[in-house]
Length: 415
Image (cartoon, rainbow, N blue to C red; front, side, top):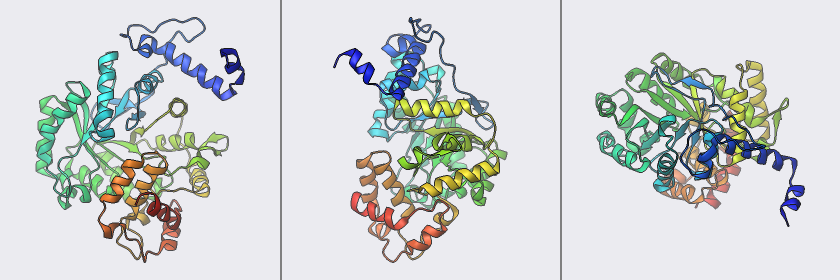
């Protein structure tokens, strides 16, 4: 098939995406070709003006302003970073464990190639200890490894990755208001190696961790699971978020589309695609500074950056309720931690919430190796959901997750 045949055979979507990619490449100029960047290159028939950066919001009381949408970088490539930048994203989020360090290395190479480090708000994370034996002091040396991997001499925001009692021990619940963490955070900032310090959390005790951060008052930002299906209905989480906002702590939302399957991605809310409506719903919460989204394709970048740019005003409560009903009716496969699910599933001590999250990594992200490794690392009793009242769990879940079906798939795919 020659070039003309291929063009004739393209669908309308393919043509639109090709045009958007060409415009982005023109806007990016030499960056898209791996060359040193100066002014955007002018190309006949293509856009001659760069696409402007995305809208920004204040990151709490830090004084920093960040893109309302940021690129999660578990799975990425040089071309995808180029394209994300070309579409206006100026905030990258990564971590020590993403692709065994390859995510940070890819970003570091991108900085070296493009010279764009100072234009990017960069967040990364590390694990101080593990296996129930967290050691906050390790952050003081581990940050040097992060700097080396990222080929930079400073990080904008340095997180404890995935704070939880299971990961770091029961003392972790006190960390966000402890003198020890305050002293470590102060040393990190004074070193100049990071501007801001915080933690990420998708644990069932997220409200307790956020409340502790508000009471401690020394952390700059937190990133937590946030889903519009739960949204304003979660009184405990909302009280903790209010406390963080009052304390000047910036909040970044993650896993906002976790559990939204293909059938939801194809749906719409009164003419607005559901994924776009989800972004608008999250941005309707003015406590949220940015949404972390792992955009793995050009189409995904186009959709999400377009949604971020098209946000104009907060959804009404009626519109949010319509969105919640549409998502639940379509069927979610993961609950990001509604009040009912945070309390566990009746009749079992199994870590059902974690099992379902790992399955979402397998099914939604295609990250089968990580999903299986995390599942197999759980103690046997944490995987044993026999005797669980799954019907009651589904009825109580704000997302209406069919736990019997999901756990059945997890047992087959992750074991």
